[in-house]
Image (cartoon, rainbow, N blue to C red; front, side):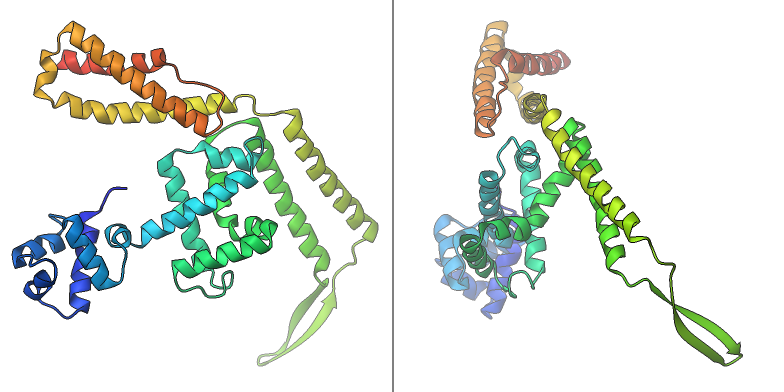
Length: 339
């Protein structure tokens, strides 16, 4: 995880100010660092050495990781803990399991961070936990007592983020059925709330400029047989739609993963190519060296991508040849442009 120098600088400055020290006084505590060095830390232009980071962390009551990465690092750790639990609870052959496994590291981290922050904001859920550590203790406690509860309720906000994004991004059988089920469940919930409501409305009548009378009037009674029939139809539709999940499985899911990884790989390659293109020695690569470079990079990347697929239980593989084509096309363009 990359250190945000600006955030680290602000953290160090806040620590110094809380201690009521000048830059010079603070520097003396940190292995006699010069005032100008402390200033560079606080401005985010340089990072203290490992030894000095440890001293600053001790002074502030933080760990070095908390100092370097701030609260988000802890939140991400909690998110990853929950995510790994969810993977065990939702296998890949379930709709939720596919949604959880579909996104790349960056998107997954974003969803987990947002989800954990949302859970923490719901104080009634975790009995007013004030710190991330308290939250984690409470999570583990509830998880051990009632596994179904922890997954069904406490992690709902995280799961929903993955599912909503997955349904929006991927057009496939299960997502089409899921979207239909979602709308149907909205109708069922409306129907149930309508049944529970007292069919009474308040009426208002003016009898003079400054006088009004109010009374309740009963709405037209709904035939109970009609209510029962509609209820049965809605529940049967829900049942039938769920059966379609098995009848029309997502046969292309492994291919979707493969395409996703190839797209991620292409982005990685494009980033690296910008670095390669700035290399003065790049022009001087002869054909033999160029081919050797392509071969080595392709082999390394194919191994990395296949490990990712294996990790995510995907059956498809991105071959060395496919990666080689991606690399060669891009590198040829750069080399030709530099001639």
